[in-house]
Image 1 (cartoon, rainbow, N blue to C red):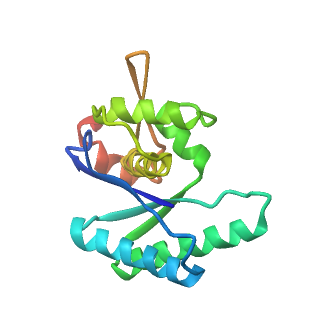
Image 2 (tube, rainbow, N blue to C red; image 1 turned 30 degrees about the vertical axis):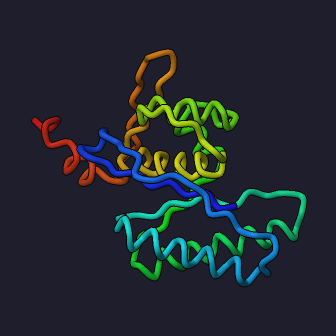
Length: 179
């Protein structure tokens, strides 16, 4: 199963869910056919939604080498599809995604989903956590790329700003702070 989530952002803080779902891959198809389906799905989503960026969860290390190889191939196909559409690709570790969404890198899937519901003001129930995981990657990417991490815990919003890579960048992004 491959989850995907697509968001639309207005004014850097107004985030809307465009689509969240999974691609179910039949175990009856061989590995190459499944990879082709992943490629076709990613290409179709890119054509339909015209995203500006692409984010994906980085592979995590597991005990089963064969599963890791299959996951790596699937991720490679998805990344190649995005790159062929000239999208920038960013990878996030599962821990980084959870930290960005909940403030806790060890949060469980249900905690992540509850925070996504609050961030996006949605109440639909997920059919599969693969879809909510993908949505969390999209939101994490938005938070990380904009330099603002918003953590909502007990109704309190905290904003942390990423360290700027240079003074020139800081000045460009904060003209009102210059005297």
